Length: 304
Image (tube, rainbow, N blue to C red; front, side):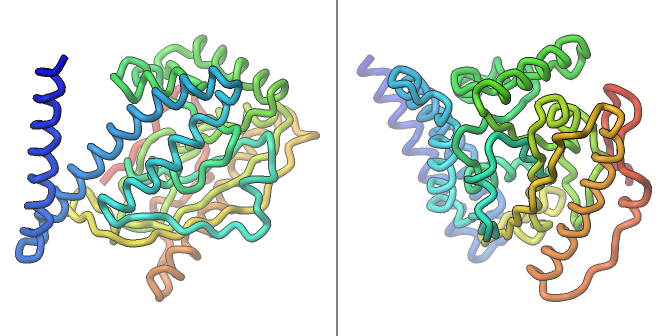
């Protein structure tokens, strides 16, 4: 055991020295900063996932298992701020994040950095949904399983429907909120836009009779743009919109609900990005159409 701990200490020390060297090098070679923050983000996520496994077990033992994702998310917020200099600022004047429960929180999905966004905004008594393959990822998958994540097998519509039904029952009985990305995948967009919305989050909200709370994040390609090898420090604005009541809606209303919510979110994303950048923006041609995936199981894709 002592030998294992020794090698772990050597590995972590070497990793930290490499990250520090890349940060210093970035003063002269900007691309070094991309790799420095990338490595710093990965080790931050790993450390917080390990912490999450421990805290999830502890909180479940003392009867507070449903706040373990909130506790772990907050740890990632502070660790990432220290290691990368990146954080998200939250505009929520009516405190919808903490006073709307249960709810289906939905947000736009840009890059892997959205994990940090969740770390900054995640409310108590809320869980995420994730593709079932993540369950097998060491540390992160263990934490997600222990903390009540709803896993969905996208390749199997029967399992996906079962997972949604289970989530609906938990929302009703336990007042447990859920955070979902209705685009279903990351956009990696350079300008503000939204991929077509899948309808799962909206079906879940209607089935559970829970309000939808849209959360919009400004386009942050000036902070992280993977294709351009750009990864800078900075603060990214987030805005929490007014909850959308679903009490009297049925499955027949889901497509209209998804379309109207997407249009609302897109306007707010453009406005928030304009405010962040300090100049007006033109709407992208990617945003033309009603923006709702019609066929069950279809994957949204950006084409160049």
